[in-house]
Amino acid sequence: MTHAGPAPRNGAPHASPHAIEVRDITKSFGSHLALQGVSFTIARGSVFGVIGPNGAGKTTLMRTLLDIIRATSGSATVLGTDSRNAGPELRHRIGYLPGDLILEGRISGRRLLRHYADISGPVREGRIEQLADRFKLDLDAPVRRLSKGNKQKLGVIQAFMHEPELLVLDEPTSGLDPLMQQEFLSLVQEASEAGQTVFLSSHVISEIQQAADEVAILRDGRIVTIASVNELRNTAIRHVRMSASGVGAAELTQVLAAVPGVGDLACTVDSAALATATATLSGAVRPFVQAIAALQVTDLVLEEPDLEESVLTLYSAPAASGVVPAGARS
Amino acid sequence: MTAPVLRPRGAGRTPELRRARLPVFGKVFSESWRSLIGWSLGLTAAAALYLPLFPSMNQNSQMQDLIDSMPAELTRTLNYEQIGTGPGYAQATLFGLIGFVLLSIAAISWGASALGGDEESGQLELTLAHGVTRVQVALARFAAMAVKVLGLATLTCALVWLWNGPAQLEIDPYNLLGTGMLFGGLVLLTGSVALLCGALTGRRIWGIGGGAGVAVIGYTFNAIGNQNATMEWLHGLSPYYWAFGHNPLSSGANWGVAVLFLSISILLAGATAVALRQRDVGV
Image (cartoon, rainbow over all chains, first blue to last red; front, side, top):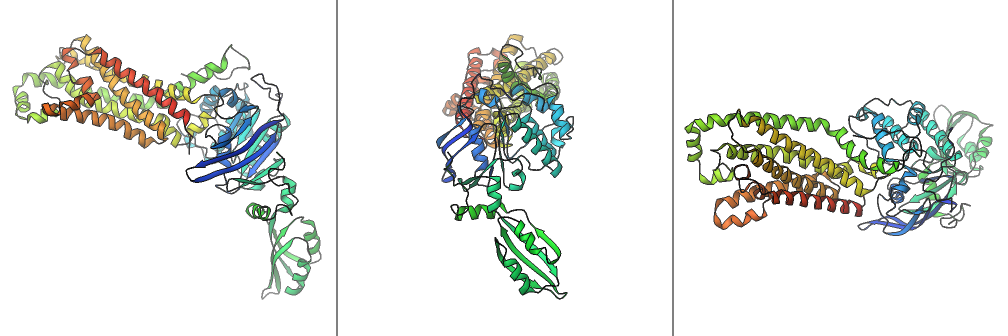
C-alpha cells in the first residue's frame, strides 16, 4: 500500500487506544438471547478475530457495532464514538462486509463500487482497479452474473477501497478460493501495517489464524475466551489417523499412548498386517511426530485443529488451559 | 443521476454531504429505468387501445344502448355513468380504470421494494453501513418513487392530450391538468403506503399488501358507496372517490384534494423515515 495510514477524518485525535470497546452488550430477539453480556476491547491497529459456530452471535455483534441493529442493553464505543445512532461521519471511517452478502442487479461491478464510493469516504483514483487486479475480478461483468466468490471479492473491495480506519468483516473469506484467501489475508496484513484496525469473523479458525493477533471465541452469545492465536492452537484438538506396517496393535498403542496430548486412542490391525491408529491430539505436534518417526509409517492424516472441539475444551476447562478467560482483559 | 465519483481527498467544500444525498436517489433510476420504460410503453398502449374507440362509441347508439341496458349497479361500479361524453369516457376508462390499475401496480411494486424488498434481499444492510443516514435513504427513495409516479401521471395526461383531437374527446386542458394531479396524487399515496409498510416490516410482501389494500379498498368503497344513499358514507373513506368522485375531467378538479394527497404522501414518507430509523435492519 502506497498510501499513508488513514487519518481520522472527523478531526478527533486518537484519544482512546482502543478502536472498539464493547461493554456488556446484550441483544435479545423476542425470547432468544443472541448476545449475553459481551465485553471486549480491540486495540487500534490490531487484527482481532471472532470465531464461533453458526448462530453464535458473530453477525449480530458486528451489526450492532455498525448500528444496523441496536443492543438491548450495554454499549459500544467505535473509534471514540458511541455506536448507537452514530451518524454517517463514523461509518465513513469504517469498511463493512456483511456476512450474507447479496449483490444483485444488471449494473456492472464497477458502477456498483462507484455507487458505494459515493456514499463512503473518498476513494483514491485507481484504487478500485488496483484491488480488482489483485483479486482478478472483472469489473465490467453484470453483478448478478458473478459467481459467489466474485461477489465476495466485490464485497471485500467495497470494504477496503476507501482505506477506512476500521474494517468490520463478517466471514470475509467465505466463497473465496485458497489463492484468493491468501490475497485477502495479505490485504489484511497490509491494512494492519498501515495502522488500520481489522475486526473479522469466521467459523473456521484456519481461515483467520494467519491474520489475527487475538481471537475471541463466541458461543451461544457469550464470549468464552479471548486468546492469542498461538494460545488457542495449543489448546485445540486435532484428529489424527495413521497407518504403519511391521508393528502390532499393542505396540502401536504403547508408542502413541506415551505421547503427551493423545486421547481417544484406538488401534486395529487389518488382514494385510497394517496397523491403523486413530486418536485426538491436543497441544504441540512435535512430540507426536518424534514418537512415530521410528515406525514404518505408510499413511498419516493430521487434521486442522477442530474449532468446535477447541471451543468445547476451553468452555469446560478455561482455567486449566492457560488461556486468559473472557473479561480478564477488559 | 449519480455524481462523479473518484474525488481526491478534501476536494470540494462539503464533499460528504453531496455524496450522501444524490447517489441514493440516482441509483434508483440507474436500477429501474427499464421498468420505467416498460410501464410507459404499457400506458401508451392502453391509451392507444381505449381512447380512439370513443368516436365510434359516441356515434354508434348501440354502444350507448348497451350501457343503458346494463344493470345500474354495474355501470355505477365501473364508473361508466358519464361514459357518453369525452371527458367522462377518458376518466372512466383511462384515469379511473386501466391507468389507475397500471400505475397503482407500478407504484406499489416500487414502494414495496424500495425499502422492504431491499432489506429482505440484504442489500439495505450494506447501504446503511456506509456514510448515509437512514432518514436520507428513506427520503431519497420516496423522492425517487414520487418522481417516477408523477412522471407516469404526466405521461398519462400527455397521452390524453395527444388523443384529445383525433378521438374527439373535447377535454378542457385545465381540467386535464387537475385530473392528472389528482391521479398522480392518488397513486403516490398508494405507493407511499407500500413504502411505509415495507419499512415497518422489512418485508416486500407487507408493502405490497398495504399498498394494494389502499388501492383495492379505495376502489371498492367507491363502488359500494355509488350504489345507494345508505352506503354513501363509504365515499368518505375512499381515496379513489376523493380523486374521481366529482368527475374532475368533466367538471373541474378540486385542487385541495390534490394538495391533500401530496401532503399525506409526504407525511407517510416522514413516518417511513422515522420507522426505518427506529428498527433493527435485516433481522
